Image (cartoon, rainbow, N blue to C red; front, side, top):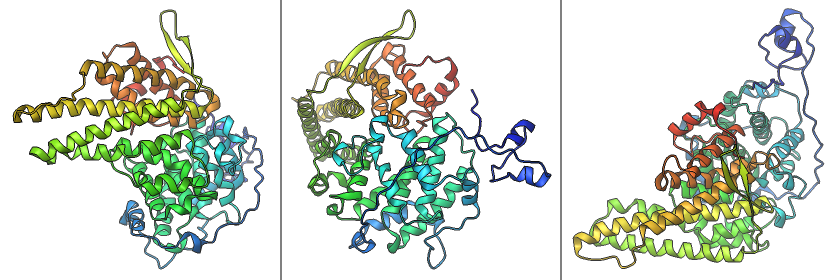
Length: 514
């Protein structure tokens, strides 16, 4: 079903004309002398009252920027380098920015309210940013946005990024997959200003971090290029790493750190690249003043996993005893990660997880798992996903060591039973699929399906390898992928492109599993 665009005036809609959405009258009506009947307004915004807080000086935020700043600048590419001698704090209200402004005349706080209402789960909307123990989802970093708007101007970088994100979130919530507000031009404009901003140390602050995160979220919903998501995320990681971990112990920077640590970590697993998050100071110092949540505890306990995966990818470049020793060490490390996961599950054993059977027709029944809250669902599905990663790598290591040792006369006495491993993996992947429906409820807003992508990706890859193509759990997994697409989330970067395209083609014929 096609959704009405809210930036088309009534006059152009009735005459079936193109409309540029300008206010108070569109260009088409102005130039032809017609009376412009205005725009349909379907959204009601609740004002967000900001409280004045003391803001930290830029000088205190900029002490000792290390070499990691170069990574941040490099991540945006030299082709976008700004050639001028400096950058104004206020962007001009011309060009692409005017395209974004012309969609509507909403204020910064109205866009923040829109993001809150459409992105954050209902249980998170009313929680205070400064009750940090209550922040249970990584997307809660958006709660810092009202404070960033204090004392800034409509042309500031953070204003532009928030308006851009707000428009994309609005489109995604309506199932619109394109940027009908001139989004690609706006994206390029933001990117050029951002690239210049990170090149100037005096502008390197929380506003830049928030702007990068806005682009990261946009890429999760409407990818602008194949590598943009990784580029923005790499830029944000460089921002964090360029500062001492003591900066993230409290206040707004702590909220940013705990809010975005999960996406940095799970993307590191996905890309099989080590991360600074595994260093002891980054696992402990930011939590000196605030206790870590269950999700943060999961990350701290398994932070070595991306490094293990990166080392395993280097095995083909080694030979002889060096390769065998590295493989054996990796196997020991993976077993240790599994032990820590078991300990975490024991600690979280009090979490109540219900189950019931759901039907998608007279002959299709499947079990659903139901959780007391989104944090519990997130933690358990991600524990199962990380466990699957470890088990699949252990199986591959057993095959590798068998082939290596067979030629040398040695024997791996710690080899695991392949059939038993496969059974465990299918069981865990099925539990993930049975949990996703909870995360796709309407009250979970856009954050629910976004948080389901990583565990569902792991489960999907596992089921493709260990189950028959027509198995019920595979059908369930594919149905859930379609449900996420229907929610307005782009998953092409997480699932094989040929399967994603097939799912889009069969879109109307696939039953909902959520």
